[in-house]
Image 1 (cartoon, rainbow, N blue to C red):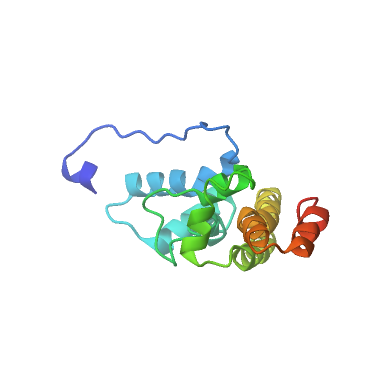
Image 2 (cartoon, rainbow, N blue to C red):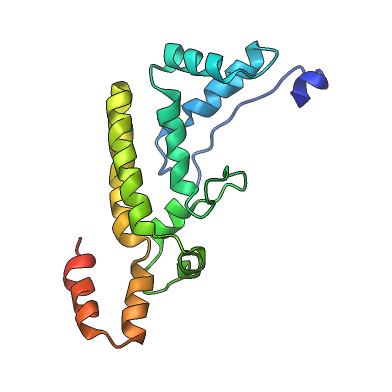
Length: 178
């Protein structure tokens, strides 16, 4: 809207493959579709965008938008305007270092339950957008890993602090290998 108001003649849409390029390229389709939609319409229209997305991309826009839930973990349903990325830092974090464990503890979010729900959501997305089943299967696997790993450091530290050796043994024998 600002570009239109200022009569900007050229606007570019980019996607960056930085930080290891772990995000599948197809995940950028909603942003590209929105960019095109805003370039061809005077006003944003969500229903029209969904139709254009289906026509041009072949997938369900709502399924693609569900991917944002991976990085909205600590936002209590708010939009991720700050570009938080807990799916990345909780995946790569060394559970013994606990660099981001404070975020898990302070949020009060049951990260295991959250990611289990997200895993089921990705299963549904595979059915709703079969052309992108592999993309959503990738994210289903990410959700499964994060269901077990996101709070692993917290569980280890809590068990250690309470001298719960049986809990630590179970984490070592079952949780970590999984």
